[in-house]
Length: 187
Image 1 (cartoon, rainbow, N blue to C red):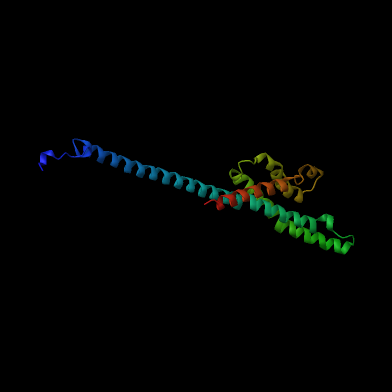
Image 2: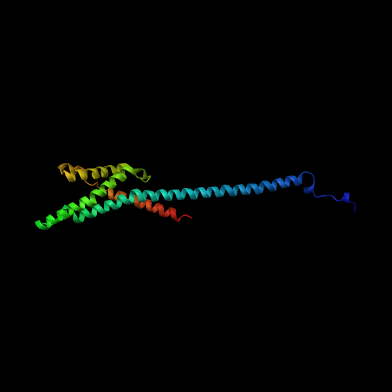
């Protein structure tokens, strides 16, 4: 058979081998690029989720948990050892008063100072659906309590512990804990 009579297939003639190689190269590079973009997006989403977990943990650790636990501690002391719990008997009443004074000096006032410091220095950690205005009356109460403990006057009635603040902090804290747990469950 004459070698010139043998015809080569169309894909081996002219520039077709070059076009084929270019097309295969474009497809493989396109797939590789798509994988890189997909992995970068997944990595970014993971990093953002981890940063969100870190921030919520910080909000809880440095703002909501300490304020909530100190308010609960102070409330427990007021309910169980405060002036309204003093017995009628004068001797027992005097002892209860001395204990109350020590608890106030060693627990309540230091807790109040710490909470006021948190409100002043850590308010940037408020939840996005919380507002500093909820804490203004609490801050006034914390500051005035020490003053009126040293110099009691009838003006203290205007600076009582704000109603609803404990429930507000508890609700915001629970919302953050729920968000944190949801973020940790996502894989």
